Image (cartoon, rainbow, N blue to C red; front, side, top):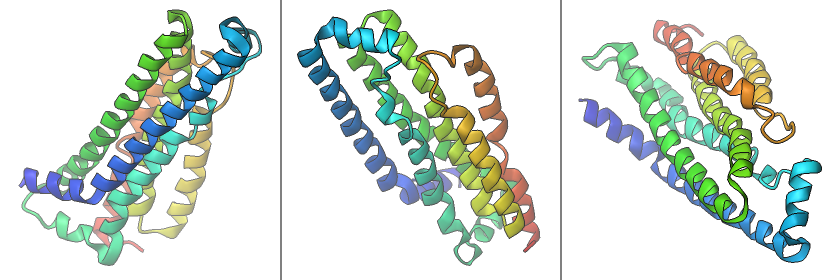
Length: 222
């Protein structure tokens, strides 16, 4: 039964996930082509000076990409479930309703994490070719909140799409915008360092928010 649920979820998101990951790989490749261009025409010392003293974020083009990924996978996974309330068929399986929903949710999170970790690993590997370890570390600290924003976007899409009450949907959308803004501020490099543990905790807490919408969905509220 569980394998069937996982397979169903995979069929819904596979091409979106593959497309997103492929686009991310191409995007990171393009990012480091621009870095190479900067090294060629400005020299390594000049490029590093812009990063260290001028606040230039060479990876800034990537800021909204994880957020886009979370939105994309969330919509691909949960929107089909709301067409003619198909998710009610899932709730009639001989399994606990919350367990089924959390299994679907966990599968989406795992797929998104695999994609994010692949992209982050590529980013770190290529950064090591151009920058010293401390600059690589500071850059990773700066982009981690953006990847967390992608997970938060996924969680809120699940919450909003499954929510049967439009008034709550509107409220959740406003809250989602507020939380997303926390994660994608553009301070100086590594400024988010002290806040990352708190952002991790906040992200984990929001991971089960969809249960509130699912409860009303099961009860048939409109």
